[in-house]
Length: 161
Image 1 (tube, one colour):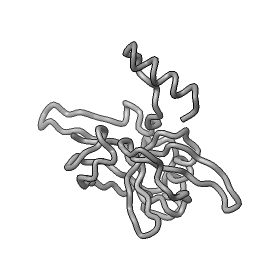
Image 2 (cartoon, helix red, strand yellow):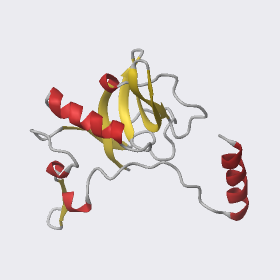
Image 3 (cartoon, helix red, strand yellow):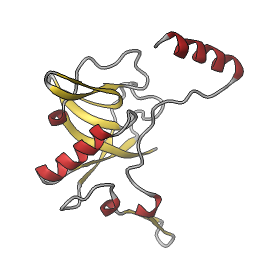
Image 4 (cartoon, one colour):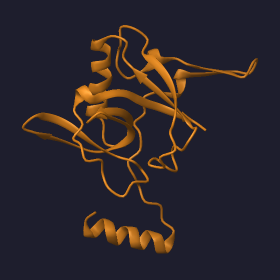
C-alpha cells in the first residue's frame, strides 16, 4: 500500500467513506438469468458469456472449506458457482478473458500442489509471460505464486449464501 492509499484509508475510516476495491467483472449479463415463479426455479443461460464457447461450460457448485481466507465474501459452506471450458480451446477462451480483465475476479488455481479460490489483485508480465497474482480477501498478504494461464482451473461466476 502506498502513502496515498494509506492516507485515504485513514480519512475514509474517520468519515465513513467507502473504499473502492477491485470487484468481479460482469461475466453474466442480467438477461442471462431467468426466474420462474412456478417452482421457484432460476435458470442461468451460459450461452450469454462475453466470449463464444463451442459447448456449454462445465459448471460446479463448490462448498468452501473453513479457511477464513475469503471472509466476508465467501465463508465455510457457502457455494461458489464455478465454470470451466469443456474443451481445451473453450477453457483457453475463459482463461484469456480472465487475464484480459482488470483485477477483481475470483478463480480457482492450482500451483505447488495446492488449490486455492482467491481474488485476482494484480497482473503482470515477466520473462516467462503473463501472470496473475491472487489474494484471499481476508489475508494480510498476496499469495506467493505467480499464477500462469495453465494453472487456472475454474472461474467463479457467483456465490450462493
